[in-house]
Image (cartoon, rainbow, N blue to C red):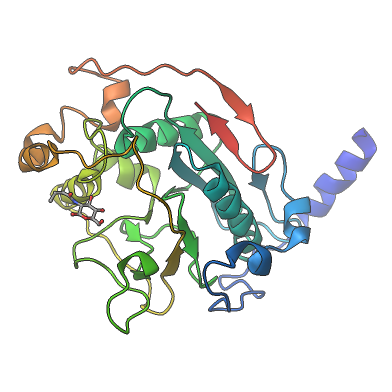
Length: 291
Ligand code: BGN
């Protein structure tokens, strides 16, 4: 009721900003795949999530707010594991956040870049976010000190993943210029690079293309410390709607020529006439869903 709301507002006025370093972090999470769900999910955090997968700290004023954007198709079990895990950890990080799952409708090959762009624009319509995290559905953060905040440069939040395990190195990267899995950019950083290319259908290349765009816009990805950016990749079968794109090498070769012609600006000023249709929006319990 109104009186209770007023009281809440006046309490809020006396709140302090959340501390630079959140006090409740534990560091490296003591869990091994594949037992991810049961051991890292804390039910209390799920009770505090608002419909659409939103949260804001009750006892301090958050430092900015983060939209987590998950390009997605056909992996509901992964989405359920990931969103629960994120609610648990992002609340410990005292963030104001909202999780978005951006799903591609059939029948077509998966297009991660296009979904990231649409998710970015949709999040901007939905709320006032200072940071946009483009997040793979199968990437499970294993150190809660990996803060989902943005920086003065675009951030690659992965320093190692079990997807690229090599020899006795549990968490690896496939090559030094790999900038995929989980990245965090501000509105102006994302826009300055003109977002992702929209023309990579199927697996591969869109992330390398995005890294080139970031560099050509005079920015450079930064990573957290090595022991902080570690992720478990949830294992999955090969995906018939995300087959290796045989055209990706050729498209990547002309990355620079396409950068300002198509990207996130394709939905504003659109010489290539890229179109998409919104079939559905749902404010689900743990995330906002756009088809
Ligand atoms: C690379 C893919 C990336 C993918 C990584 C890791 C390409 C572009 C043609 C050279 N790049 O080879 O998209 O994230 O592997 O799996 O295919």
